Each structure stands twice: as structure tokens, then as C-alpha cells.
Image (cartoon, rainbow, N blue to C red; front, side, top):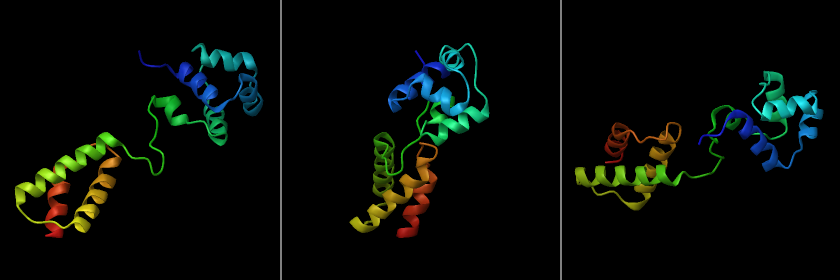
Length: 132
């Protein structure tokens, strides 16, 4: 069952070790209002969310239910897709690619794919043609 905005808000608050009182104090609301947000009885305004950002709350997660990749984090499923697509494309061309070029190719394709989470085979083919 997907989490609601209110349940994600409570989850984030707990993850960061904050109380409803902490958040109420920072945002200028009362604790009952915070409780109402977490119970889906009310929804906060942009000023409230901006204050949460200042305190390290992942507001994108609150709004979308998806956590943004942290800097330096690797999405293993995407990395597997990149690896499989590149290996298949190199195999299909029959072009020998040394380890250094292959590593650069993986890095380039992974970076290009990380925003969407999808590997574009056309980008892979163009990148391989550039290194050959």
C-alpha cells in the first residue's frame, strides 16, 4: 500500500528524530496542526515545506513518495541495465574496447541514464561509435 503524504511526513520526522513540537516551533504552526498534517486532515503551504527543507527533511519524498538519489549513490538496477546494454552493443559491433575506454563508456552512459532511470540504446551506440 503506497504511503500518503501524512504518513511520509511522520516517517521523515521519525527518521530525523524530530518531534511534532520541534516542527511546530520551526514552522510557526501549533502541534495540533502538525498532527492534522500527519493524519491527512490538512495540508501545509509552501512556507512550511521550505522551512522543513532547511532542517534536512526530504520534501521531494514527502510530495512524490520517491527518494532522490544521494550524491555518489549508485542505483544497482540501473548499473546492471547500463552494463548489459553496453556489453550487448559492443558484442554486436565486434569492435574491441579496452578496459579504460569501457570504464569511461560505463560512466558516461550511467550518468546520462541516471536522470530518467532508463538506458537509451541510441546513446550507447553513439558513444561506442565515438570511441572506435
